[in-house]
Length: 121
Picture 1 (cartoon, rainbow, N blue to C red):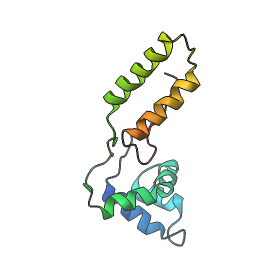
Picture 2 (cartoon, rainbow, N blue to C red):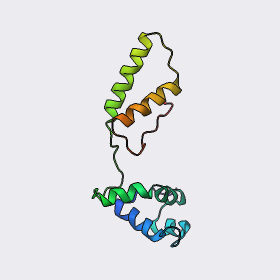
Picture 3 (cartoon, rainbow, N blue to C red):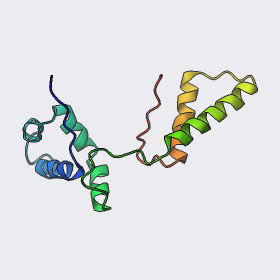
Protein backbone atom coordinates (compact mmCIF):
# COMPACT_ATOMS: atom_id res chain seq x y z
CA UNK A 1 0.00 0.00 0.00
CA UNK A 2 1.31 3.44 -0.92
CA UNK A 3 1.70 5.86 1.95
CA UNK A 4 0.02 9.24 1.62
CA UNK A 5 2.12 12.28 0.87
CA UNK A 6 0.78 15.74 1.56
CA UNK A 7 2.65 18.55 -0.14
CA UNK A 8 3.19 21.93 1.47
CA UNK A 9 2.02 25.04 -0.35
CA UNK A 10 5.62 25.71 -1.42
CA UNK A 11 5.87 22.24 -2.99
CA UNK A 12 2.53 22.70 -4.76
CA UNK A 13 3.75 26.00 -6.22
CA UNK A 14 6.95 24.26 -7.36
CA UNK A 15 4.87 21.52 -8.98
CA UNK A 16 2.71 24.12 -10.76
CA UNK A 17 5.86 25.90 -11.90
CA UNK A 18 7.34 22.63 -13.17
CA UNK A 19 4.20 22.10 -15.26
CA UNK A 20 4.41 25.58 -16.86
CA UNK A 21 0.95 25.62 -18.46
CA UNK A 22 1.36 22.15 -19.93
CA UNK A 23 4.68 23.05 -21.61
CA UNK A 24 6.85 21.60 -18.86
CA UNK A 25 6.97 18.19 -17.21
CA UNK A 26 4.18 15.70 -17.83
CA UNK A 27 1.74 14.89 -15.06
CA UNK A 28 3.19 11.38 -14.80
CA UNK A 29 6.72 12.81 -14.40
CA UNK A 30 5.46 15.29 -11.78
CA UNK A 31 3.79 12.46 -9.85
CA UNK A 32 7.04 10.51 -9.77
CA UNK A 33 9.15 13.58 -8.91
CA UNK A 34 6.95 14.60 -5.96
CA UNK A 35 6.05 11.09 -4.82
CA UNK A 36 2.30 11.56 -5.19
CA UNK A 37 -0.42 9.95 -7.28
CA UNK A 38 -1.36 11.05 -10.76
CA UNK A 39 -4.78 12.05 -9.39
CA UNK A 40 -3.13 14.32 -6.82
CA UNK A 41 -1.14 16.05 -9.56
CA UNK A 42 -4.32 16.53 -11.56
CA UNK A 43 -6.15 18.01 -8.54
CA UNK A 44 -3.29 20.40 -7.74
CA UNK A 45 -3.15 21.63 -11.33
CA UNK A 46 -6.93 21.94 -11.44
CA UNK A 47 -6.86 24.13 -8.31
CA UNK A 48 -3.71 26.03 -9.25
CA UNK A 49 -5.49 29.41 -9.22
CA UNK A 50 -6.46 28.94 -5.56
CA UNK A 51 -2.94 27.78 -4.62
CA UNK A 52 -1.33 30.70 -6.46
CA UNK A 53 -3.73 33.10 -4.73
CA UNK A 54 -2.83 31.66 -1.32
CA UNK A 55 0.87 31.92 -2.15
CA UNK A 56 0.60 35.51 -3.38
CA UNK A 57 -1.40 36.60 -0.34
CA UNK A 58 1.32 35.24 1.95
CA UNK A 59 -0.55 32.28 3.37
CA UNK A 60 1.58 29.99 5.53
CA UNK A 61 3.63 28.19 2.91
CA UNK A 62 4.55 25.29 5.17
CA UNK A 63 1.00 24.13 5.76
CA UNK A 64 0.08 20.88 4.12
CA UNK A 65 -3.67 21.35 4.26
CA UNK A 66 -5.74 24.46 4.24
CA UNK A 67 -8.32 24.60 6.98
CA UNK A 68 -11.84 25.54 6.09
CA UNK A 69 -12.39 29.28 5.86
CA UNK A 70 -15.75 28.99 7.55
CA UNK A 71 -16.83 27.71 10.95
CA UNK A 72 -18.26 24.21 10.63
CA UNK A 73 -19.74 24.32 14.14
CA UNK A 74 -21.73 27.42 13.19
CA UNK A 75 -22.79 25.68 9.99
CA UNK A 76 -24.08 22.69 11.98
CA UNK A 77 -25.95 24.94 14.40
CA UNK A 78 -27.54 27.06 11.69
CA UNK A 79 -28.61 24.15 9.50
CA UNK A 80 -30.08 22.36 12.52
CA UNK A 81 -31.96 25.50 13.58
CA UNK A 82 -33.35 25.91 10.03
CA UNK A 83 -34.32 22.24 9.90
CA UNK A 84 -36.19 22.42 13.22
CA UNK A 85 -38.05 25.56 12.07
CA UNK A 86 -39.13 23.89 8.83
CA UNK A 87 -40.25 20.70 10.57
CA UNK A 88 -42.21 22.71 13.18
CA UNK A 89 -44.22 24.06 10.23
CA UNK A 90 -44.77 20.47 9.05
CA UNK A 91 -42.68 21.09 5.91
CA UNK A 92 -41.09 17.86 4.72
CA UNK A 93 -37.33 18.19 4.16
CA UNK A 94 -35.56 15.82 1.81
CA UNK A 95 -31.84 15.14 1.88
CA UNK A 96 -31.38 17.14 -1.32
CA UNK A 97 -33.12 20.19 0.13
CA UNK A 98 -31.06 19.91 3.32
CA UNK A 99 -27.82 19.67 1.32
CA UNK A 100 -28.69 22.72 -0.78
CA UNK A 101 -29.51 24.77 2.33
CA UNK A 102 -26.23 23.65 3.93
CA UNK A 103 -24.33 24.86 0.83
CA UNK A 104 -26.11 28.24 1.00
CA UNK A 105 -25.28 28.64 4.69
CA UNK A 106 -21.63 27.61 4.16
CA UNK A 107 -21.25 30.35 1.54
CA UNK A 108 -22.81 32.91 3.87
CA UNK A 109 -20.22 31.85 6.49
CA UNK A 110 -17.31 32.55 4.12
CA UNK A 111 -16.78 29.43 2.03
CA UNK A 112 -15.25 31.42 -0.86
CA UNK A 113 -13.89 28.51 -2.89
CA UNK A 114 -16.91 26.20 -2.48
CA UNK A 115 -14.82 23.80 -0.40
CA UNK A 116 -17.82 22.54 1.57
CA UNK A 117 -19.37 19.42 0.12
CA UNK A 118 -22.73 18.38 1.53
CA UNK A 119 -22.75 14.59 1.93
CA UNK A 120 -25.47 12.04 2.57
CA UNK A 121 -24.00 11.08 5.96
